[in-house]
Image 1 (cartoon, rainbow, N blue to C red):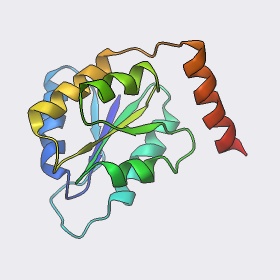
Image 2 (tube, one colour):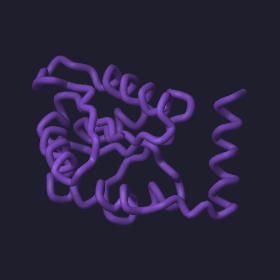
Image 3 (cartoon, helix red, strand yellow):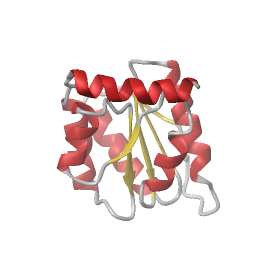
Image 4 (cartoon, rainbow, N blue to C red):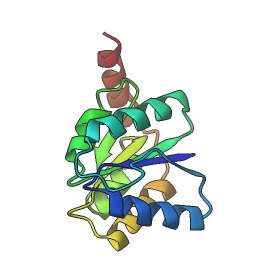
Length: 147
């Protein structure tokens, strides 16, 4: 399952990505925004998606705001979320390979649809390496969340 959500800054890109993913055979749950609303707030969507991803360990999430930074900040406040900002091929691959990110964040005002589709595909197609150094580092983050 892939959850996707965006505020007004990411709404148009969310709609394009959602259709791209569904056409690609992915099961997608759209958690909003349901319409373009310039007064909405990115934390509302970030928290909603993050809580869903934490409940379903097999799920992943895609969050989109103007730059992706606000969504990333907010999502990472939810224990168990490993949200990262993706802005090129390298960060998309690293998100999965090294960081085992369960949420990626994109900037709807700085990433065009074709780039976003490419980044999402790279993230989805890349497996976590499970190298000891990456596992060790992620474990340290989990320990901090638990303290």
